[in-house]
Image 1 (cartoon, rainbow, N blue to C red):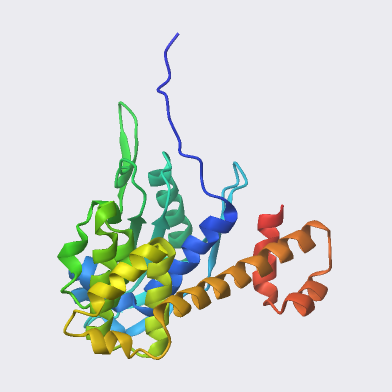
Image 2: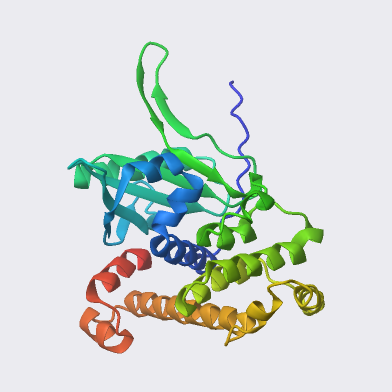
Amino acid sequence: MATLPLLIQEKPPSRLTYTKHDQLYKELIQTFFQEFLEVFFPEIHKAIDFGRVKPLSEEVYTNMLDGDTRRLDLVIETKLKKTDVVIIVHIEPQSYQQPDFNERMYRYFSMLYNKYRKPIIPIAIFSHDRQPVEDHYTMAFDFFHVLTFNYLTLHLRKMNWRDYIRSDNPVAAALLSEMGYQKEERIEVKKEFLRMITRMELDPARQRLIYGFFESYLKLTEQEEEQLMDEVSKLPEADKIFEIPISYEEKGKEIGKEIGKEIAKKEMVIEMLKEGMDLKLIEKISHLDIEEIKQLKELAK
């Protein structure tokens, strides 16, 4: 009898945790789509006409075999420079190891292509510490090679955060919190993050977004914060950092609260749907769009 290979799968995070992760990445990359490609995928950045960027409505993918339902949050339509070629960029953040992830990327690609019939650039962002999965999916027999599907990857934990602190790129600043750094470097990472924000001179709303993302993945202890403030006070740009009207700590808390409220509302709607409540009544109570409620209904099954 043949011995099957042993597959060890990390337990996926709860729906609440995964939803928060997806929401954070969606807000960051949709707001700074051009900057994301510029710092991590410069060849794609050079080819795209950013005057024609349109986020598509949230896609819902249902695996008919196991009933798994997920949203493809980062699906963006744009076009190539000096052409009429419209393309789609699909970005999939992945926070935990999944052995069949490469096949899942292929299924998402197939679904999007069947719907839009446009060229697609698929990108996976890995933020877990496990061994990276393959960057392709192959279907083949001993006697015939059917296809090889490739997708681009960004392995954040394999990246050295010091390589990006001079980029003055808002996405790079936020993602410092997800890159590879040692425990003893945590204070230094946040200090360089604050210096980056000061140099970029972003508007308050974008500062909030970047800081909220950073704080979600790298939050210092009170003792570390005290040491950080002591080191910041010795910097040439200390006055600029301390002049920010609302403390970064409070901004981070506000972002976390807003995301928490949104997740709690959707969890409540899912429970209402499980109880068989009328969709119109749920819409009135929750103030969610009816289409979004219909999508949540798939999750409630």
